Amino acid sequence: MNRNRFGAFLLHSLIAAIAVVGYASQSPKTGQPQSESPRPAPTDTGAAQTNTHHPTTQQSSDLPFDRPPLERPALRRDLPAKEAATTPPDKADSVKLAVDLIVLDAQVLQQKTGRIAGDMKKESFTLTEDGVKQTITHFSQDTLPLSVILLIDRGGCMDPFSDRVHEATMAALNRLRPQDEVALMAFHNTVDLVAGFTRDRRRIESALHRIPPHDEQASHCFNRAFDEAANYMNHAGNPDGRRVIIVLTGITTDFDCPGPSGDEVRRTVLESGAVVCGIIPKTAEQRLESGIMRTVTGIGGVFKAKASNLNRLAEETGGEVLSDKPEMLNHVFNDLIDHLRTRYVIGFVSSNTKRDGSFRKIKLDVAQPSTKPEDRLVVRTRRGYIAAKARPVNAEKPPTH
Image (cartoon, rainbow, N blue to C red):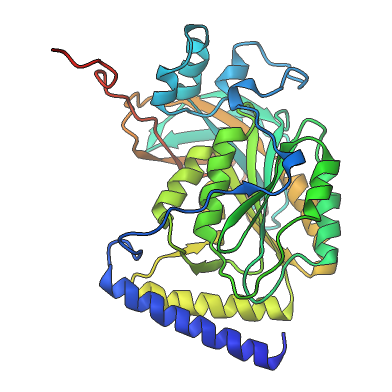
């Protein structure tokens, strides 16, 4: 980034911060315009890559499952009640299990070294929901296929997707198992679905050459990107697998663009059951831009301006944000894939049977047999979930005359 370009970027950022702060003072509740044009839907720019399968018809008969038949539908994410009401009678049991079972994707680390702790047993964990102890009904490690959305940032002053990053990305994706599926999305002011979910790595490699060009005049619309990615995951991701959104970007925070609010996006991501992770190519330009954005969004936050934060969302969903120099990103990507492969899948049926659509706090802990600091373990998982919402009994009754 030359000096003139940096000066222009800094001026642009400060003007944007002032504009957002000014608007926030006029609209303290939302920080967004009262009326706005509809958000552009993500578009698949590669017709050959489009995958139109529905979650209930996912081709999963070739996937290795060694669990009893009744456990597989139980691993499906908790679906909205309105979907359960329109499901044929022969799928009623599957939907009931899907609504009742809550699935957590958890990682266990040594507190001092950050190393992965493997070989954990179900009995090693304790689980509470809103302070009430829950019974773990399902426990496994690295047995379920992955649904991975790779979300690439194309806005801002710096382009994080260099040739080295491109090579590291493809090498990491090739380390996934054959039954894992990958989708590719790109974003700045808009969100593009470049390639739908596929298990064919050649299609993803081809799609990586078709991502939209970098636009340094565009914004990093994290709120739109996370919203579209989570909605697409809900619509097309394998319902029987684990879900991950990997964001490749140069910054971790930016003001929200017109669209869903941060709270709405957070809810959508939690409902998708996806773990959010980030990969950041670390360069001098990246640190400069990221520092500026942290500063201006921090100033805006004082005036209630809405902003999205990658670190916060990763923490809330049990994910992680990793960074290193572009030439070292192959190791960073490999570490992330290894971490995903050593995570535990923990399922439980809540003792709270109310379907009120409320947010429920989750706390997953590991029993600590040793008091030595070097042996202390920490658990990384999502902090809560959105309960299913009951459908009004008379919602579909025809009018009476």
